Image (tube, rainbow, N blue to C red):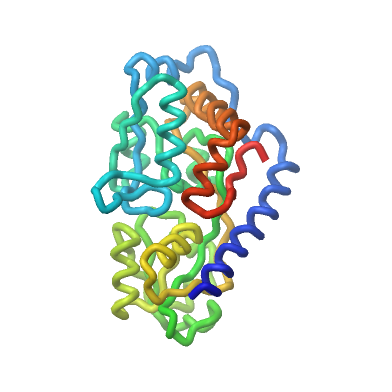
Length: 279
């Protein structure tokens, strides 16, 4: 079990190295654009003195409910500190992850901040900050399962979360998807992993950081295949055009990275500073 966790962490660190180099080489335009004079998003949030954050409250370690039913996590800690520095209240609003963009566009929430993967499709519909964390889509199986590669899962059934980037990763891996007997969508990953444990599915496609956290936290006999589906980047999503708010949040995160706050939160939730803010 320790070997599985070490492999998973090493894989994430390796991905961070690759992505950090890519980010340094990327043009400056890859981040949030500069706000225009007509963008009142920041003023609106400051005027109402609260930032409503939409999240899946069963997505550890990014955002989830603890034993006291409080919503906690890495993203929650970051967002609380950002709100505090802006002098406003943070409101955590659990949402149906499959309807997250609708919640944002109808004004029910101000941002999506919960292990939210940046994709080309989402970038076309939303405004994103720069990436703050690197991730990958991986395959989780029961520890005693005979599978070691994606090819071993041919003719088997895989599960994933509806509306998640796992869906995109699977669609992009056309040959692997075609080899599967079937794909089952779940509302959230905790249910998916429980189904995996009892043999309802043969594998779960999910985020590496979440998979590692679940194995470490639950102590259950899962393991992560070394072969991954796709690398990813986490960003904070805002309504299309809400540039001033996105820029202010990112500016605050950069200040937090400089003074060591981001590193402290990363150590708390991941056991190492795997953040890429300002790196």
